[in-house]
Image (cartoon, rainbow, N blue to C red; front, side):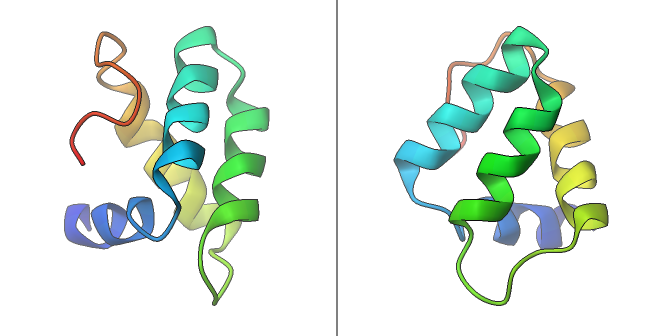
Length: 69
């Protein structure tokens, strides 16, 4: 599943990934989900996929935005 989440993460532009990471660090998870879904390439990711990605990104709260690219 990690590979799928990594693929989903890279379907968004770097600026959107940085914005989502910044929101996750602040605990604004709903806003981060919206950014991920809004900016990902088609097909639009499911809410379930986005929650999995958010959980993975939140597991590393000290990372700088968009690190791991």
